[in-house]
Image (cartoon, rainbow, N blue to C red; front, side):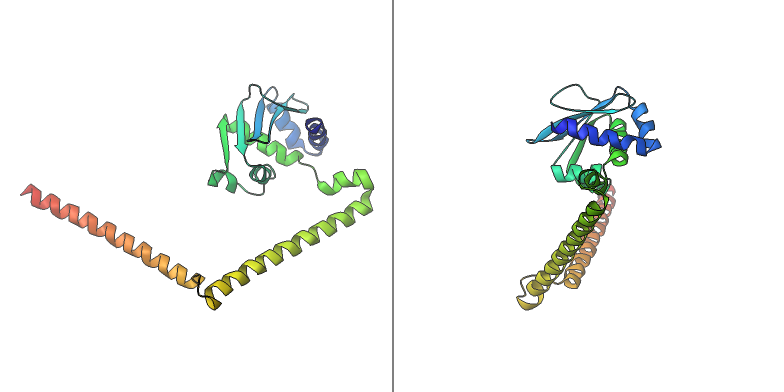
Length: 197
């Protein structure tokens, strides 16, 4: 049920983009597995003119494995950070995986458009604006809360180090490390010279 719904949503996005149709044709006969360990494993394939989504095991050209949130961030094209941090792992043909990632970005559904199919354009637009406003308010509130907690912990309770003090300490540690490396190099050179005589 989930895979059929996902397949329909992705295939509705194909006609919107010339590049998506081109990638779909290039990936004809190719399949990748998108896996959130312990939750689900979906096989995404291309027939050349459409995409197929199914659950389960099977032979694939590449596997993309990671947590649900990291996979969403990566497939939405919001950031490549999950790959850099190692939250998402790619096994197999990385080029095929990258092409499927680009294809998914191009055909990913517009939530407002999908909602408008159910409840109409005007209500969908209002719900989308409400959701966007709620998300922005939550983001601002969380940012303010974290900043206030940090200031309370560093200034009022003195349990935390303030940002400038922390940065100064880290710069001093880096300088000490560099000095120690130079000292070690000089010591090795001195040992080499005394050993040669």
